[in-house]
Length: 163
Image (cartoon, rainbow, N blue to C red; front, top):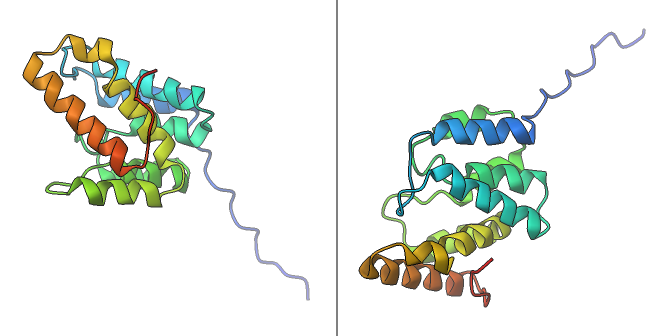
């Protein structure tokens, strides 16, 4: 007797790179960074930094979304249901800091998640860009520079964080 079991349904199509960018831009609409610039500029810079470092489409998608859950721009539930690869979702979750989490725990999760370190490198590079930090007041600039330097050490990175 022939097998009449229907073949499994194909997976739903994934969001295109342009769709991921549009979702991220919409989710962060109206948000600004510490210098008062539109937050989407940071997301674009991180995505471009991932691309320049040889990242793939899944990592670039994660770069666009890397702060969305942490900033409450999108929910973790949305992320889990989104038409994204499991790897992209895992990278976004790895880069999402949890309340009260120690930097060592955060760094360990990034290091344990395939593809996440490259995205975090691009994020730190843009965050630590001297031109970007220069517009901040001295106390904020010093605090952030120390924070970013500590994270680079925890991640085992020797790069300066500049693009």
